[in-house]
Amino acid sequence: MRTNILAVALQLVKEEGWQSLSIRKIADAIEYSVPVIYDHFENKEAILFELSMDGFRLLDRSLEKDKRKYADPEKRLRAHAETYWNFAFKNPEYYQLMYGLGMPCSSPGKAKPEFNSFRDHIGEAIEGIVKDKKTSKEETCFKIHALWSVIHGLISIVMMRCSDIDDSQMNKKVMDESVDAFIKNL
Amino acid sequence: MRTNILAVALQLVKEEGWQSLSIRKIADAIEYSVPVIYDHFENKEAILFELSMDGFRLLDRSLEKDKRKYADPEKRLRAHAETYWNFAFKNPEYYQLMYGLGMPCSSPGKAKPEFNSFRDHIGEAIEGIVKDKKTSKEETCFKIHALWSVIHGLISIVMMRCSDIDDSQMNKKVMDESVDAFIKNL
DNA sequence: AATTTTGGCTAACACCGTTAGCATTAATAA
DNA sequence: TTATTAATGCTAACGGTGTTAGCCAAAATT
Image (cartoon, rainbow over all chains, first blue to last red):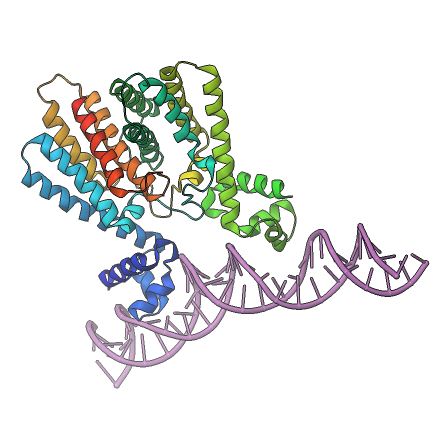
């Protein structure tokens, strides 16, 4: 039963996104009435949480495979990165659940210029730094994304309380060192 | 009126989080009935969207200040990173709105071991790479976070359609190059 | 055979976003 | 000045949500 609920919930999430998942839809799909779901889960959040746990477990299995496949730590690290990337885009529902991504109002795209303010600003600065070196337009674009990513990623991780570093000054230090390394590598 | 609605909405978001913002609460706060809100905004999403735009504009003003303050591109770039970081943690509601962060079921913390699977796996590999060099425990922890951040950040940006790179292979290339640069810098 | 436990349901509560339709007031036209 | 139009704001409803109280019948136990 519990398993059935989770399976059906995942199915619905895959079909219509987690935003439109409802207890009643799950009840319909398993052909039971609504309250039976509350015999197996405390509330809707608990269902989503359990789904996200399944996501983490699924990812973990792939990472374990990498571990068995690659003894060399560098090769293994590259494989882990690849695995993580593929997991995210093959299972976007899971990834969104795991890291709390996606809410009504976002998905701005490139429509409004405001959204690109940060990218444009750091882009300008980066171009200023690399203007003597012969760096291609494309390469520069990549660099911009890389820096934006590391900063945004760290903020997300810290905000979602996924970081194991408690001290906020420590997290800041991670960013500072990342920016340092980035500039050194330009 | 429109301004008032947005101001009140922002206030409510700051107080109780955007998750519990409702049209009726806004209507109560501005001391009007519900339908008048729909004379000024198409729907709730439009209100959240407009708030997120305010966030982007607020951030932009700070970035413009950096631009005027620092002519040297490297100093300016560091200032931009600092500004972005500070903006996120001084205005978490805005940041969550802008990048669609936070949904029911997340904020896992360190409670369950599953959540740290990826961190632990890349941690192991990184330790394998740096074990000859005399890298401190703390420094290693920072490195782990840095790599995790850049990958997760890029995935988030691509998933949220914030990236201006359309080709998914190109985005993958950004990650690969970032991982390369990271390993080279270990 | 009587009693208790279980499994499952209906119906409701209190919210939510959204909209149709109706007042009342203010502005315009005659 | 009066008649008509436009603007303003409301009540009440529709269909949906998460959640729970209370009940009924079948199954298990005593």
